[in-house]
Length: 305
Image 1 (tube, rainbow, N blue to C red):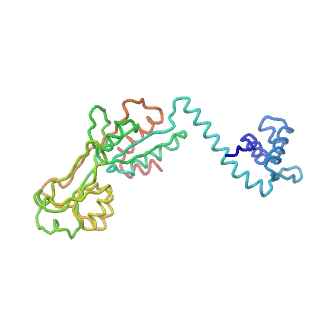
Image 2: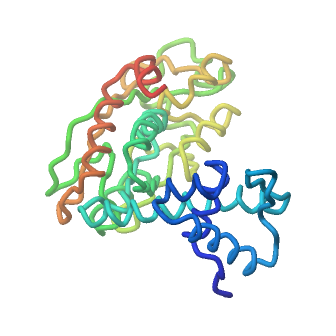
Image 3: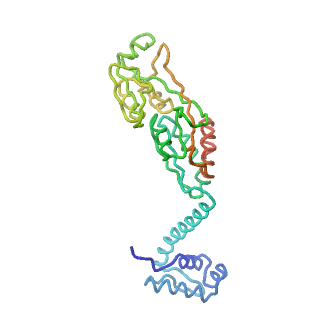
């Protein structure tokens, strides 16, 4: 790659000349001599081979080419400043990245609210978000490739922060045979029908959470796919209420009237990597995740606005 001929300092000097209306004014702002500022801009034009400024009376005015280049240079200088700030924050122990793994059943809106509130406080720290299912979350945390994990699984050897419950409901299409029984659905009724289950993304010890040993079983890769299958009449499933609100309103999914077990309320937990101390950015994100997990939906939307 060809090395740039013009330095960031030269671009900053040009910006100062334009923003302050002339070489003398820019010199005062930059605490340099006017001759130094004039030489810097002249040298820039020579290096680029393009006239950037023209003198109109006593004022320096951008040429068309200068206007385009200056506009793009502002992004360049801003990014360089952000990079320098990030290096400074890292020197003070601020993380460059926080790695978060979340179970696919956890409400994504809560994560969005937490990350939206985190962004203005992040100081350039980026978040790498990863979605797994069931034991897949635990595997990622134990492998050390996540700093934080949200899961309904009780992870042995880790102390988790207790978060809220998520409601799952057994549902099927309104025309499904289970809705036509004329009585509450039993465990034996479910065993004769096709159940749609979500594949555990864990590789070492995958779990069959929620499978009832139905004669027919379809395994899919995500809760969203499961909802699509079931709302089109392909079997029954337990699905998070927050994910199927639209289908419930539209009537493409209907809760099963069951003798027992029609609704489940697993509790979620927030875990951290016990082999890595929490940095300041991670601590801020932890508190935001806790806040928006506890906040009612309407309040969460108002706080993040």
